[in-house]
Image (tube, rainbow over all chains, first blue to last red):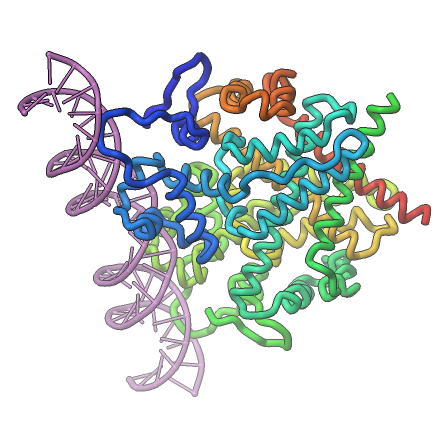
Amino acid sequence: MEPTQNETGPALPPVIEAAWGLRERAPKGPRPGLTLAGIVAAAVAIADAEGLSAVSMSRVAKELGAATMALYRYVGAKDELLTLMVDATFGEPPAPGGTGPDWRVGLAGWAWAERAALQRHPWVVRVPISGPPLTPYSLSWLENGLRCLAGTGLTEAEKMSVMLLLSGYVRSDAQLTAQIQEASAASGRRMDEIMPEYGQLVARVADPARFPALHKVISAGVMSQEDGPDDEFVFGLDRLLDGVETLIQARTTA
Amino acid sequence: MEPTQNETGPALPPVIEAAWGLRERAPKGPRPGLTLAGIVAAAVAIADAEGLSAVSMSRVAKELGAATMALYRYVGAKDELLTLMVDATFGEPPAPGGTGPDWRVGLAGWAWAERAALQRHPWVVRVPISGPPLTPYSLSWLENGLRCLAGTGLTEAEKMSVMLLLSGYVRSDAQLTAQIQEASAASGRRMDEIMPEYGQLVARVADPARFPALHKVISAGVMSQEDGPDDEFVFGLDRLLDGVETLIQARTTA
DNA sequence: CTCCTTCTGCGTATGCCATACGCTTAATTG
DNA sequence: CAATTAAGCGTATGGCATACGCAGAAGGAG
């Protein structure tokens, strides 16, 4: 499991090489009885069914009918497995939408797709990210996002920054959604009860004299309003893309 | 440690009551030898010095000269302690800046201050958030942010959404920064070596034919560019506030 | 065909962790 | 002084990641 260094430049983490299929099996020794993809799939299945905390090395091994330590022939540590789980979960991104003048449609589609993926697998946002993306599907998603920005007049650095901003936003939103859902499940209350209750709690604890702006928000009934679960996401996405649009227009007119 | 229900409405988690100083000590029984604030301070000190993973109940207890289980008289579970650690770390927010027409200066100041707090205590972004903010300082920060938006013509719901968006952004950015710093520390390389190396790795692994946009970014030297550590943050913040400005202008002209 | 290398699976062991439970004992009220 | 209440904490349970080293499989070299 030493990093290999077959070319010049910094070493590639072994598990990344494996994920890209760059590892040729040594001709000696017994045949591997497991596959990396199989291990990752089993782990994802557990996380989907019982949450991230149910994913332990021994649990994954049991699911595969193998011993715990067998997994360590395929991943160097648990957090490598987590990285691969996230990658597998995203899967191939949808075909990129509009480009050039239609960049906005394209990016919006990208964001909705990423959000959908995160909502199908809410545990993904709980995985502590351990570095910039290097895995196959992650880079595919990035690639498709960047393509939307072709022909917008932005510099390459700006395109990258926009993608960073956008993916961070989607992740943030998904994190919030997931955590509200968790709170709802934990307390046994329905989701449309949670927010009003939260408003009541804040009102109880925060002195109106010291927290006037907060009280104004709450007594306006913001927390009690019926709003589709997507409304918050739409709002942020619109703000964000408006901001990008301002920049693109500045670049085009200049 | 049962939730109390002294008024109508949903119960307040006991640790939150304690954080707001709403808990009167029962007159019987021995005097508490520890204080919640002291426990939290000890835990924060450990996290600052050795990272979040060094914070265990037994470690915190040892630092206080107490036994592990003594802490459970003050917090119901470890994640309550974590919540309080985060709150304590933020501390009192700076005085709110501009309001009304100066909302933008105010919000920018707010964002920079939150970012500064997160960078002084990078472990904060690793704490899994477990619900909407209810702790004293968290609500203070929210209050001050909301104040900046007074007189902008936004609805209360919109103000709240803007704050959600902004705080999510600051958090995202801090998470990214922290994780790059961690990678740098782990690999022993200097921080300005990390990004170019990352570019090289991507180039090695991603076929230019399948990842043209990505390759264009990398070969433009985006990863190798010298840029102040704040440039990325400034970019995102500007986009975001531009987006908010567009909305505010739409509200004012309408 | 034999031996040696190399790699897989895995049993065992270590040293963490959070936390449930119940005892002892201190502080207070009646 | 008795009864009550909560604090500190010893002990025990059941988890966890993972280091280490051995047994045996598969193939290559002679």
